[in-house]
Length: 329
Image (tube, rainbow, N blue to C red; front, side, top):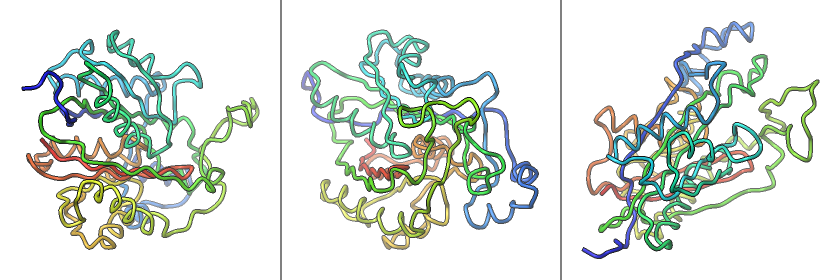
């Protein structure tokens, strides 16, 4: 065996959702109209989880990350780098990854936040894989994601109140003798930078005490955006691995809308049972949703088998897009 194995694989995963359950009935009570069946039929969400008042994003991330470490049989001191995908940080600065590194006890590791909105975790996964392959002596990277969006939800806004939820997911990636990471594709459509986001708190619009920051749909996206953009994005990532749609055993797609996932699979000519989803019970948890779906599948016994090809595909405000292809080894 060589001193520095030349490939990267996913070693373990972890996931965490808060205890508080928000049902569709509760959302209906906020809005003053019954939206339960609409959410189930059009989005696929039945309930979601929100943080407790004393929890912050890093608390969720620490819990998911510790589970991933435990599953890997590692301690935090085995980690060389902590990458945290979040667009709901504990504060603007310093990076939330610093608190995660400290609480976990990963005192050997460098750390950084990655903000590519809901494409952030897949983007961070790509960055972590590339870093491992180019950093002499590095062995393990913790790629985590956290979403504390409930702090920014306007309960009177029908477009957002029923969708967003809190949660965290994590994966430990490591050097491998066999190829795990096979290729990625990162894209963006920056002309939508002003369409969806939390636009208060930065230098453009500093915090206004009279207007609390809130997630906002400022202008509409094309309804078919993901159905049109995800298949070519995935195809480009697969092409780097010498694979085609039919070679993929599992698709882990942004968990915002089950109907969109089904439509994308149809567009790629793939059966719906190749996808995994968790939005029905956990709501939309932003960038970590894809690794949370993977972890949930593993826990349920429906995860990938050795040799399976899996695809992560995500998009988020900006619009940012990322797809990454992995073989389960």
